[in-house]
Length: 191
Length: 356
Ligand SMILES: [Zn+2]
Ligand SMILES: [Zn+2]
Image (cartoon, rainbow over all chains, first blue to last red; front, side):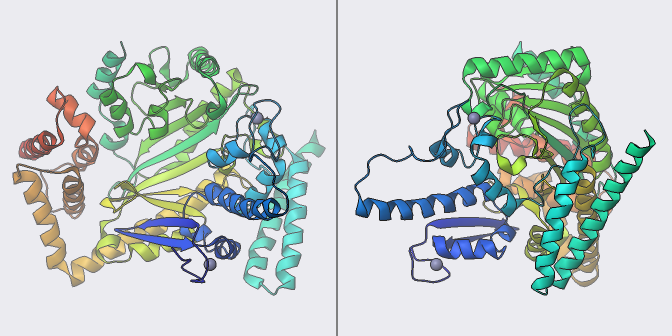
């Protein structure tokens, strides 16, 4: 089956969307899927992003290992990449289980690939919600500061690209975060 | 032992469908789930039976000593000890997920007597804490599940990272580990052909919409679930507030669509409602798909005030009780697919003949 978008490459990514009483299918090649994803089009399609993120990774990897195999005849697959010292999870497991990891330590083992996935699917890189022990949900000022810095960089990018709507949203977010921070510091000072 | 518990469950009404809640004409129920794991034990996908049993013991002990879930009077199910029909009962009642009932080796379920709170053990994550309530009331559900999570958290050492928050089996849940959702009945948007555009718009807001029935194929019963996707980079209250705003808009869109139909295409609307009632009241063979679509029509009629002898909560419960496992329980035996259609029709006839 050929890619719906470029009509040239073989489609390797198949996405189904259920909307109301209709099913829409999208068949893309890896290159077009990546492009679509970067434009946020796949995210809007509403399906398991982890699956597609790692799916794309797999295809890129297959391509590069195919190139490698052409130059030198290396043997088995799955042995490359990180492996969790605690639970033994490796890249093969990660793919087979749709991006799931095996234990808490896997988050260190696969920190790179997970960080990459998180930037695609999440709003930020730092947890701002509740914490064990029912303490103040925003007790970690360091986390807030990291988040503010990250947003400032993003804001600069938006302004540079003249994306003013996004910039306005980002500016509001920074104001919110600063207000949180001020609140926390205020309570710190009182103590 | 386990099947006695199922009987206890069946004897009590499904509170999230049977009780009144805010905006219940369109919002059927609100649900929040929290994904949690215990430090130093592998996630279920990487765990053996012994490790899963260990998690099970830890969670049961935590539930008992904290007294949450009403333990020791809570219901405890071991998935592997249940019959296939009993497992489906848990699924149809939305107490267990497909993933949980598939884990015969280590799946476990703790349920508060009234079914409002539960903990799935060894689902995708070690714990999936769940609170369900009728109507549209995510804030109340959040307060409830937050307290429940705090209680369990006093007894269990959760896997938590300073930067990433609660560590979950799938990185898509990391951070708050929270999925909040509302089940909505949207016949007006479906009939006016606006549902696709609406879903597309909601997806752009980082929220997910899916049909409740219809196995990923076509929508049945016009029931949709809207939920948050973001779990990292924002706090629970704000995520819930954002989701609630969209749900509020969606409820208003649905109301507008119904008014539009009443004003511009009343005959089609009334015909749909009337035929739905007629089929439920008078048919002798009824597939699940047809029943769901007719129940949607009946519910629309009840909302419009066309049936004063049918209670909306009875219709809500029928959305659940017309499914195979519940039908077989009320029949008291296993039924083939063809037998089920006959039994389902007679079940609906009887319920509607009774009136309220
Ligand atoms: Zn292409
Ligand atoms: Zn691991």
